Each structure stands twice: as structure tokens, then as C-alpha cells.
Length: 326
Image 1 (cartoon, rainbow, N blue to C red):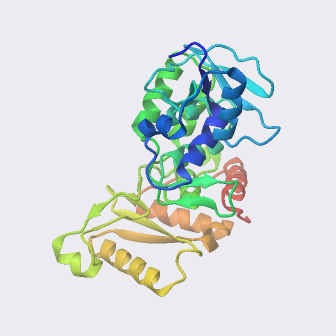
Image 2: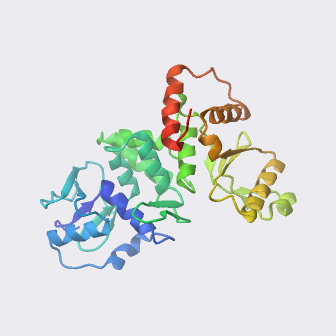
Image 3: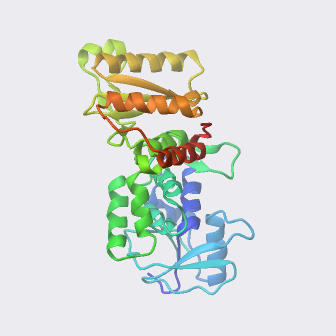
């Protein structure tokens, strides 16, 4: 690695990965350098080009990492972040021109310095999911993209950073505890965080589910399902409970409704209890608490009533995630 190389991390690297995903399909890290090309090293040019790659606005600083093989960069409008965790070939991709970009696990660990637990869990779910946020576009979201990283990769790197007592790693570890891979949408991510987060923090404390994971359909139910496998939005396999989220945007046309009804009927035929969560429930505090209580019952969980502090934290959390009125 050239001593004049620069390393983009933190929020700037997150913008880079969001931009890379915005074209859809699979992000081929081995093709990024050849796609972006390479020219002679010049620190001013490097920083300017890195700003373009990361879609930095005019007065928005570029986040560069100082550590490992990377030295300090004394250029205007740059934030330098000291980083003591590994920054080797497994943690970086090369974008040409002596510019290296931190991969998703590193970015999540670095953002533990600046984001709270819920915000960082949202980022982790996005990067491990099949959608990407593109706030600079009218649509705001791209769909049907491949996950950038697995949960195992994130856990491995963040655990290593935490063992080295790197600042931000503890916050990243806490966020990863409530993040779930394979989310299909920002709303599914927020629901997952609500389910995962413990009751003392305002959540439901109902972890142990998988999101959008394939379930094989027994042959006798193939005609009912119309396919040989199905993917429930949220599935507690051991308890044989599934939760389907009905979004107002995606469930208005008759063909989608028919598909959803067949999936629910198939799950029920397979012995699953299927619960349906709507935006109407999410935005109504009383309805959401009733839904959560019923889900607890279906999962065989018995608990004491929430105290005043728990209820206050749930109100704040649900208002933040769903715009809930309690």
C-alpha cells in the first residue's frame, strides 16, 4: 500500500456504499478500482476525487482515517479520525488513485462514535439488508439489492475492535445486538429494532426471530402456496409464530393481496400462527401494545406489567420509529 494513500471512513464511507448500491444489483468490490480508474498520486486531487466518490456536499467534510498504514492528511475540509482497529486488505477496498474505502463492518464500528444505538442499528440493518437509502434522490430508497455484509462479518470485526478497546466499538456492539440481517425495507428494520430492544429501553424484548428467510413448503401444500418455499417477514421458527407486515404502499393491488393471502394460508397450514402488523397498528400506541401482548402470548412468554419508566421509554421509542401516538 502506497504511503501517500488515503483511507475514507465513517459517514463518508457510508455515503460511498449507499451510492454504490444505488445503481442496483451486486456491488463487486473487486471491480471497484478498475471501474473508477487510477491516476497519478496528488493529495489535493485524491481528496477532491474522494469527495466526489462519497457525494460530499460543498461544505461537508470528508471523513479520513488515520491509523495502520495511513498517515494524517493536512487538507482543508477534512475530518481525521484516529482508528486503532485493523485496516488491512480484508477491511478495505481500493477505489484507485491511492484512495481506499473502509468496508461495511469497519464503517459500522466507526459510526459507534457518533450515532446512538438505535440509529446505528438502523444503519447495520440497511447494510445487511436488501434495500439501500439514497437520500439525495427523489425516491429515497433503492430496492432488491444484495446485502453488503453478513452479520457474522460485522460481529467478528466489531468484537476484535472491542477487544482492542477501540473507541466506538462498544456502541457498535450494542447496536449489533438489536440489528437483524435480511431486512427488505426501512419499516421492516424499525419493526425489527422494536422487537429486539429490551423492555427497559422501550422495546418489546421479543428477539429470536429471522427476517425474510426461506421456509421450505411441504409437497402437500405446494398447490396452496403456488411455490416450493416462502419467506415470512418475521419468523420465530421454534415457536412456530410468524408476523407479516402489511405496508400501505405495497399491499393495495389485488395480485399482491392474493400472494400475501396464499402465503399466510400456507403458513397456517404448516402449523404457524400468523399475525399481521399494519401501519395503523404501529401508529396507535394502544393498538401496538395490544399487538405486542398478543405476540408475547403466542410465543409463550409471561411477564409482569410494564412500569411507568418502561412505558415512557416505549412511548418515546415508538414515536421515533413509527410516529406513534400513545
